[in-house]
Length: 350
Image (cartoon, rainbow, N blue to C red; front, side):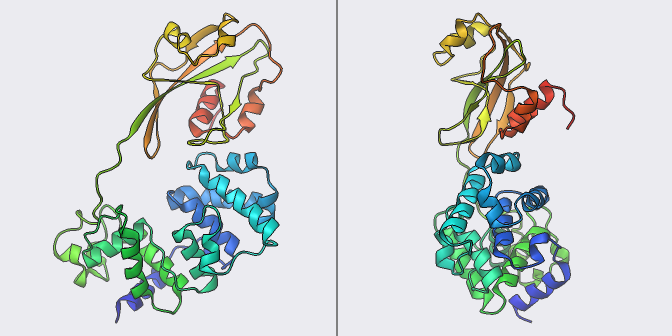
């Protein structure tokens, strides 16, 4: 029995049941693939279900406001995925008459769609032989074939995609891709892979040469940058709060946040906070009452950044007209660390 046939038989017996596997609708496949990028399946599944309920068609997603999309995405991270998802839905609806592109090349032209997502849609929906390469594929193929190329090197994607294309053949490319990813997800796992019961163990280089924990190879990680955020939780006598939209490019673009003072180190005193050059001068003039809300910085880790966050309660005697009350705050699309703060601040049960 050849390698591919063995994989497909394993998949037929072990594949999980997911909503996006019920049909080959491009919208469903695209939505699932975008959500599951850099997200575990168990974490992403509830989001897929909520998105499909709120936006059952690409037209519904296109007609939604970006704030609605970002609010529904809240907690998944990598918010550029949500912004690109919304932009692309509008493009397909307005420019392509709501019809999803049907070729690999045209799929690659969509904003936010790279080789992986285009390959998944092309193979699953349109039977186009394009192999997908994700973390599961890197791990399984590197172990079985003993590939030593670092998976985060510039040449890795092309090498592993070529290998997967050789194994795929011309028949049932979508099933092959799903089987390959599923095997890496369920069987050839990062830790404690099921080698004793593996149908590929006999010829697996990593298993036979005791290199399971050495493959795949990955070069040293990018240095994590530390940033120090001080959020000013400003409230007036009517219990309204100041919020602003984070419009600059980078993390959390177009999400709402409290006024922010970013510093070069952790700030623990009011005097040190108000002496920062970026502390709002108009706020100083109001002689606010200020106190630190959290006893120690809240650490929020992102892919290449580690945020050390302090929240400062600031009460002012003058009312402002463009504030947000508690209910309005809960309706805004905000970073999850701010959402968690709001819930704790107002003692809202999760």
